[in-house]
Length: 478
Image (cartoon, rainbow, N blue to C red; front, top):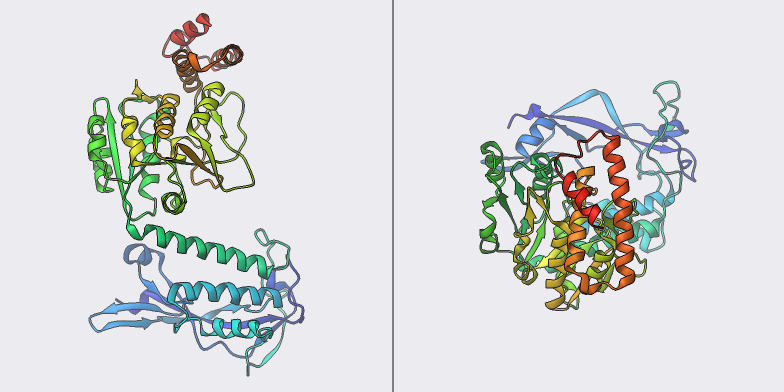
């Protein structure tokens, strides 16, 4: 590997002249400073972005070296120095910031390498000082320094990202400890390597909300999930997938199946669905599988609840909102009762769901609940919750932490399809609805009918085409 792919930078210590540290919210180089008389012994290295993307090189802890690999083994490289520039290293900004930096930094170093490591020796020693009641020294031992003023020599930018508050040592340590505790829990839970199956359906010639662009968003969101024991299945509805898209799907490691093969093709102990347009955060599976495995009860279904408020006309609802718990229990049957009466499904859709394999099998993978190039979402929730109510613990676990992307944007036509499905489901579930509930639902459906037709006219949609004749017939039947 040629050494000229890296460049080295000298770095020099700068410190605030005031013993109390820097003024919160002020640009560091705008204050009176002390400057070391010479650079530090270790350099920092820069590596070409193109090289990193292609070769994924290893960089040492602290960015001091590029670790090169050859037949002779691993060895450090630094490249040529950029002599006309250096890094202004302000390691000490205030007593609180310095204690926080060493305390949090040493916890992370020890978690990565163990406490017996050649990395981070300064961090370990400073933490020992803090534990014995001694604050870290402001200036490195033996370093000479002199006043230094950069005013007029460099531009002083307006700060955009720095909070104007002093560091809180305890708060920072608690945040770091929580992150390490979660990582430990994930390590314990995932030692058994439970496989998760992600189902991303593809609809041939679907409406834009569920078409190829929406499929791509969901599919590549699933590909980006950083869960190691993960399979992706793509049941294809209609005439099939275009060859270029199929090649992309297969190249990403997914398997294309016909809907009837879905159950037989799935190997996961847990299952998630991503409908076209739905997305998830990369850590969703790690967090939710860990939660599922480490609880004292076997939840058939877990959902991630956003806790947000949505407009009345949208088909979203937040199932549970409580500050008391981050994992809240509610009977699956009660959740379905709420969804049926409101005509709204959980705000993060199926993307927020993780189910046990028993639920997946009991609801037949939901493959039969797609029609005319779109999923029947309310019907899918009915199948899921009914299956969950009959299996295992029978209660849904709702997490307040949100591991999904933004809710899918729906067109006027999508809302009309949803209202038609809700009306059909209400007819099928009439025995669950008392007279007051039926009257409330009819009133909402009529109100939504007026709203949707007014907006369709305002958008100059042809009400004699597409969903609109059937939608108007449904409204007339109300």
